[in-house]
Length: 324
Ligand code: UT7
Image 1 (cartoon, helix red, strand yellow):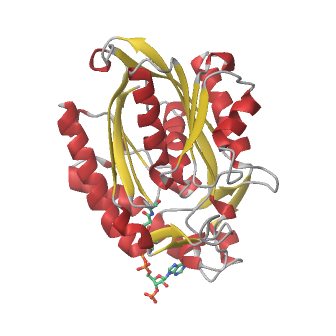
Image 2 (cartoon, rainbow, N blue to C red):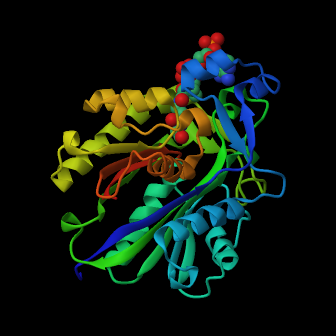
């Protein structure tokens, strides 16, 4: 393999205009602002407008990422979209975004790892770049989970929101250890946990789209242990001490999970980027949305070491270490 690595050239994000607060949720299901805040940390979530599609959210995030990277869309030769809420069963949302961006070269495809999707998409693009098969990749996490929620089920509908985030990765000569870029990714899955978090419909099984179902407290229990394990394993493989990492950008499912993981690994709370209060759980979009927010508010700076992590339906889980 040639000595190439993937540099994070730019990050971008997009949130739909409409905000649904916890007070608004109280009008939909029997719940309370107090319960939602105490159990999850969520205060509000964004909801896509009628006719606003996952590809629209993803395209807006991608445009911002390209602008921040100073790169034209016609340089992009790989688009990997992580989504569990595609516009259509096919074609891939990635090809729809490709068309909306005006890109006519390279390859575009979706990866499906639900809330871990952004890490899976990033690992895929990183490997394409390391192999010399792509020079400029767009990695996008985009979701419209509001469309697959059962709005009568208070145990799930209060948790999720819509949004998108994107990263532009460029191929650079050299080893990532010596420069800015993705240092290492660590992906895991175990299909035995399917029944704890799934959608009860699909083209082959039911010929319908279905609704999200989750045994939240069971997922919670697995999340803390599996995420912490993955982060530690990745840090060990990379030869990096957890204490030397500048920022932790977790998947934003629940503030208590974020705190549980950081406590387990001895990470100070002020190093953990949390957007769960404002975004809710946006599945594959949550990591790039949080990353983007921390760049915009000045916390994450060029050269900082960042560890991302997630767990989602499947289960799928993992972590990614990068120097921004
Ligand atoms: O992104 C993919 C990964 N997903 C996650 O990581 C989610 C992981 N799970 C969680 O975040 C938490 O388990 C939840 C936030 C989903 C639930 O919190 P919990 O502390 O585990 O609560 P619970 O499910 O054990 O339910 C406690 C009580 C129940 O009432 P009873 O049976 O004790 O009377 C629920 O019916 O809270 C009740 N409850 C609610 N009450 C008011 C559940 N949802 C609500 C609600 N409003 N929205």
